Image (tube, rainbow, N blue to C red):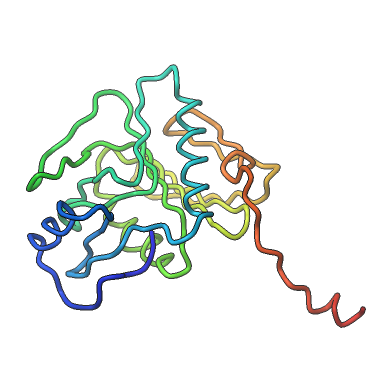
Length: 204
């Protein structure tokens, strides 16, 4: 998700929903502010596509649905809803309508692709809002500029345990879905920015 793109004025929920229903662009509502859901980079779009397609392939024989970033997810602690980059529901899909917007009620897995401008929001406020969803079991944060994913897994006592996976040669186990996802698939055909090495330059 990217940073606010509609100014700093406060919106009501009704104004937000009206904006959403009458625009081809996707927006998200948080504490009176409207945030643009435009990815902002081609890399973001590529990673989102890679992850959605790969998870979908791995779950092809299972009664699971992979949702794109246009799917609204009801968040009772931050009404009315949030939009994740990728989410998955298994079994019967439960929905509820809010002012013409169909909301998903029971995602098992949610993924956000991190942006420098909204990383704190995705890690903190948005994650807290998602945690109130009873079915929600696993949260994946995917970095754009290097092969690094962060997985949070809900424990029986409702604690969330973090696990970092770094490197294209490694894989992340998504226990909520019963699959293992290779980072090489998440980052398929992604060209990472080359980091400058000042020490090497100084020695040359």
